[in-house]
Image (cartoon, helix red, strand yellow):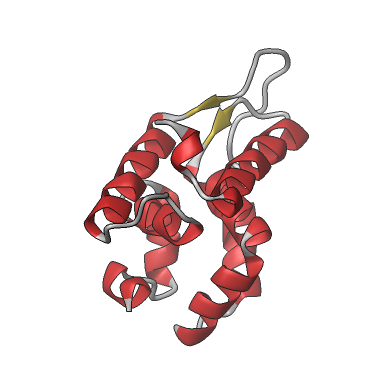
Length: 136
């Protein structure tokens, strides 16, 4: 996945996911890290989208944070992108292409995360986030 195809906000979200991994002493960047990165770097976008869906953002953030805390901690080693995040990136790219967008945006990253079989996707679905609702 070529991150130069990402909008600035999407790139900042990915960087924030890596920062979270480093701060937690973890190694694999998981979808929960990516979602938290998107929620912090594209706050106006996620706040608007989740607000329209009637989602309590603070509750969602808490569930994502709790999931992040379950990931193993390691010492040494470089952070890497997990297979679920690679899948989310591929699906985000597919959504961007279908929407005829030149760049992958934060919204596409949310759709990509939602399309994975990751626990983060399950959390989003538990809060009522659907592909159809996000696209609308």
